[in-house]
Every structure is written in C-alpha cells, then in structure tokens.
Length: 471
Image (cartoon, rainbow, N blue to C red; front, side, top):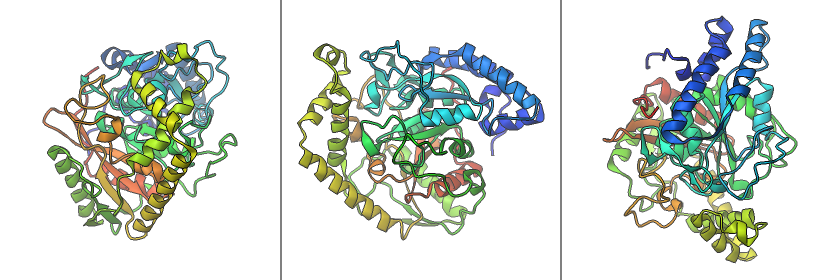
C-alpha cells in the first residue's frame, strides 16, 4: 500500500472524517486546502463551471461546530464534494454545458443524490464541466469550452463527467457526483486515474428523469473504492421522485468491502470477443490486474460473454434521447448547439417507434444473455477503454476512422443497456504517463461485490500510479 498523503487536499473522505472525529484537523482547514486546489485545477484543466468558495467555507464552519459537539450530521459531514453540471443543486445554476439554458433560474431544488449529501453534512465546492447535455464521451461544450486531462492538459479528460474526474484527480474534493449513460463516469475516471462506479440502474435515485431514459445512472467518482462505498451509503437512500428506484440497499456497502475475493469466479474478456483494437500497453496492464485477482484467490478464466456489439441499438436509444432533449428548442437556439449534438439529434428524430422498440428488443436479449453469463461468473473483467487519453477538443482520436465517440468506447455502453453495475479503477500508466483503467462488471444488484473486488485491488497496490502534475 502507498504511504498516506499528508496534504489535506489529498486525503480520502474516509480519512478526512476520521481526522475530524479525532480532532487532528477541522473541516474548515480541509475545505480551504481543497478550494486552493480547485482554483489551481480550474486554471490547469478548466474542470469547473463554478467554484462556490463562500458557500463551501460557510458549510465547513457549520460542520466544524457539529464535529466539536460530536454530533456529525452523517458519514460525510464536512467532506468537500463537487457535482457535475447536469445534476440539480439548490441555489446554483445547472447549465448543462449549453448556451440554450438560461442561468436566471430559479434553482430551488436538489436532485436526490445532492439532497442526501446535503442532509449528511457534505460541503459543496462547485459544479463541474460536461459536454452539452452530457451527449458524448469527451468534455467540451459551447458554453464552457474544453476540459483537459490532469496528466496532460492538452489531452481530453474523457466524458461526459470529465470535469468531475479531473477535479477528484487534482485534489479539488475527494467525492464527486457524475452521471453515466454510456460510460460517462467510467471513461473519464479511466483517463484521469480515479475510481468510478455505475451502480445497478435504480440503486441511486435519479431526478429529474433523464431524456436518455433508463440508460442514465448517477454514480460516485472518488479516489478509491472505499470512498465510493461510503458515498453509496448516503446517495442510495430512497427518494419518491424517482419512480424506478430500487429502494433501500440490503446491507452496508462499507462492511461488504471486507469480504473475501478468494473463490470468486472471474471471467476475463480482453475484447468482449469483438474486433476491438486494444492498445498493447492497455492490454498488458489489464491482464496484470487480472493476475492480481488470481493471486488473491479468484478463479479466473479467459472467456468472452458471447454477445454481439449492440452499438446500433444503443445509437437508436441514445440519439432518440438527444432529439428529445432539444425538441422544445426553436431554430435560433438549435443554432447554438454543439454541431455534433445537432447531428445526432437530427438522426434521432428520424427513428420510428418501431425502430425504438426493435432496439429495446435487442437490449432485453442482451440483458438475458448477460444474466445467463453471470450465473456462471461473479465478475466480468475488461479494459475500461481500449486506449489512453487522446487530444482534447475532439470527439474521436485523429486517424482512428471513428465517426462517433461510441467507436472508441466499446467496453462501456453495453452495460448501460443491461443496467449492470460496472466500476473502473487505475491499473497502470502508458509510456506517456497516462492512466489505464480496468473495468469490473457484476450481475445486476451485485454492486457490493464489485466494490469488494475493486477494494481488494486497491489494497493489493494495483491502483498505485503517479499523481497528476497539472495543478
């Protein structure tokens, strides 16, 4: 295991709350350190749409009083948190990366995950960047520009939760709320060297309902799996505004981290059985992480899940959702949209109801196939992304031949279709020092198991990579 960081901005949420309880330092000291990092991170990568220093310090002072009285409001009291700018936050504009959204508000409501964090005493540092309406796997928008990578600001942070990933990586708060409709917490987490979890659909209540329907999840983006487990215990609490929520989780995510990895049945699929050109350094790092699982006692078999690429069905559902997002806009507002978003909206508007239902049929068959697969295997392990971060400001890597972001993210969007829990953690760096991610996928409702396996890899040192230097 690595030596514990000494700078307050580098501590995990778990370590911060332990320090508050022991009187080692206060939430005010921690938040001041994080705000300093947030300003540096913004300068280096443009990862924030807004930094709320006054609100954060006010919240930190209130938290400090609760800790002094030994009456914390909850398990994340005093922990600095950032929120992706697609998620409603009371009193703060949620601009969605779009020039078509009016900033005046009123902004009177918290999304369920924000509300639960606020009730638990979390301190909100600011809102993080997203592509317009979260439509693609990189983070640049007409309203807020390009977000760079913490390891090389000339490269992309990934997306669509790229601002959150960069903020966490650079010490601008150990916890962040992201959203994931096709890989949007996992892609940027992989590119930025942090942890992220797309939980089983409905495990984290989501409101307002996403126009992308049941593809879209809210998920934790953190420094490690232990912090994600902590965050899940807060944000999974019920909220009546989400009609599709699953209700309270059975058991404690944090307690589940201590469970054994020995005996787990692990399927390792280097390419899902498709023609995926995985970069050699990515393939080698992921295989090394799988070897670590085997060394911990997991029963590993290299095998593909026997599914075909569902990208066309995903496009039908995703592009239709995008078309629905912009449907209320007039011609003047449509002219303000990201050109790529405008293209997929036009395509989405051409699909018929029968096209949509055919995509749903494909989705159901895929879900059944993965359910059958997980009757034999507890976990599926793949690369998170087949490459490392490429140049910032473009949707696809130069010379790749891809036309849309889904061309280079084949390992993420299938598991939005199936609604399974999927996490990513760092497992190495390439020759340029850019992070590589490994993806752990579990059966539906096996969120605690995914977190347990990821935590074991952290404990084994798999995720030990150099810190970013952008800030």
